[in-house]
Image 1 (tube, one colour):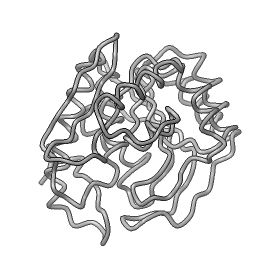
Image 2 (cartoon, helix red, strand yellow):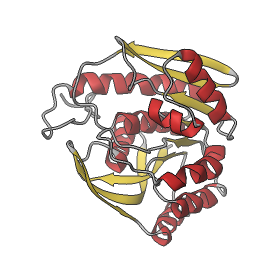
Image 3 (spheres, helix red, strand yellow):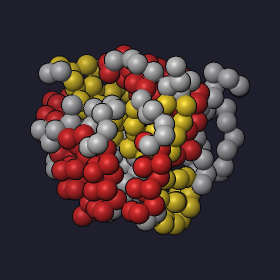
Image 4 (cartoon, one colour):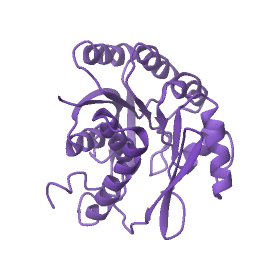
Length: 265
């Protein structure tokens, strides 16, 4: 049976993040990729120069087209920048029952804001309760929890508790923005915490890491893996993509990870 994963996200013209990274990840892991584009960004490895939101009418039409014909097994939500976009997506997803991976894309690696400030509360109210898992990095977790950026495991745990209170089933707080020789992600699910560590990869090619990890979780959920297994497999895939990405020569800034490292070098 074909496993189908749907990404609802923005387009990255440089191909390293967003819809493009999601489709590459789904495909590399053996899931069929469907997409709903929420915004078009003009960006490359150096940063974002323009953003144009897709109309709510067109976003809803894309969702209806996909769900009316394709047997979607899992959904990933990435860049949703406006209140009306968030509300419309949530309304449609309430009619579905697939696992939902919410990657709260708020600020790009370059520092460019991708979520309007007044939309954070709507994201918390409308989409977090629908999420099987939400995957914020340290700055995003701080914004969702309404606290300073966590420096300790205790502070990370407190932020996870606050995020889970909004209704999300599980939360993965990513440690890629942290310091030290290891990058540790913290998975909070079923009342327990599991630390997932891997050696920190010394590379400038880390554009799209958040999108890629969330997409890999989505692909593995679509293929029938349970949540903890999907997260572990996704982290292994991303770690391999980061290592292989050191050899990619794409652009002149922070390049992408190597999504197809298992297929070509």
